[in-house]
Structures are given as C-alpha cells and as structure tokens.
Image 1 (cartoon, rainbow, N blue to C red):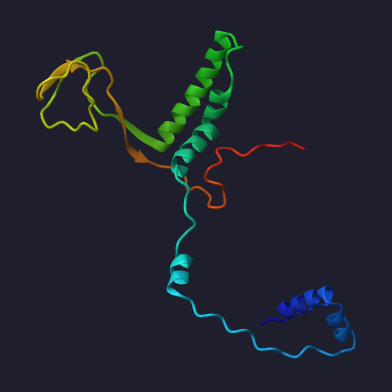
Image 2 (spheres, rainbow, N blue to C red):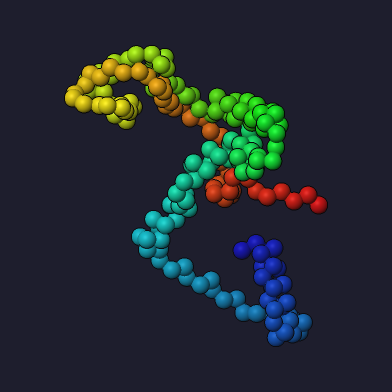
Length: 181
C-alpha cells in the first residue's frame, strides 16, 4: 500500500476514534494487521461482474424521443396546450418543429417506402406477399393476387445511425429539467 493510502487511513482512524488519536499522540503506532483474506468468488459473482446494468424496457424508444427533442423540440411542442393559440401561430411553430425533426430523421435513419407504387394508384398484391409488409383492407375474399388502390406506401428503416448514449445518463429521461441560477 502506498504512503498516501496509509496516511489517509490513519487520518480517518484518528478522526473517528479518540482512543486511536491518543495512541498516535503518544507515539504508539498500531500493530500491523494482515490484510483480510478476500473471499473466494463464486460462479454467480463472476457472471454478475461481467454483465452490464440491465437496460430498462423501452430505453431505445426513449432515446429516439431524446434525439427528436434535442434536435427538433418535438416533445415540447406536443406537450404544449395549443388550444389558446391562433392557427397562424401554430402553423409557424409546426413549420419549425417539422423542419428540425425531419432533419433529425434524415441524419439518424435511412427511411424508405415499403411499396414502390404511388398512392391512389391501382396495384396488385401478389400471392405469397408478406403480411408484415403489406396490410390488405376492405372487402377481402379469396386468395391473392389482390388488386386494389394503394392508400399508403408504408415506411421501413434500412439503417439507424444513432450516436452512442452516455452510460451515466438515465435512459428513461428524455431531457433533464433545467434550472438557471
């Protein structure tokens, strides 16, 4: 053990115990005691040491909100009661939030349409289509192929490029409270 560590221990012992302070004042040094043996590590201890702290469910979704709040102030806008504002005021705010959030999406996600067709165009849904990618609605009967009108092209994410989140931050906090003093 280094000298600083020994001095630090002595300081706290003297400060915490009148008897220890008296012994040091009289020049009677404490007897050196062997360091206590470290207990054997069990298999559970070893496994626990290797595991990072569990991430709360939904932390990744919250991080998306963090980015949209930080770059576009989306949460501030959505949490605001806009009933008392004129349509022109709301429109001006929407343009600003929209532009910033759209940029944040473009910066961090590669978003592509699921279907290549144009909305309101007649399309054919082939046999063997993936129902996770195409939802058929209306008067559906029989087996595919189905012919209908494309109401929405759908969206999918091809790539996510998020900055690494600092491990000491609470993953469930979108934005910390700010107090100016």
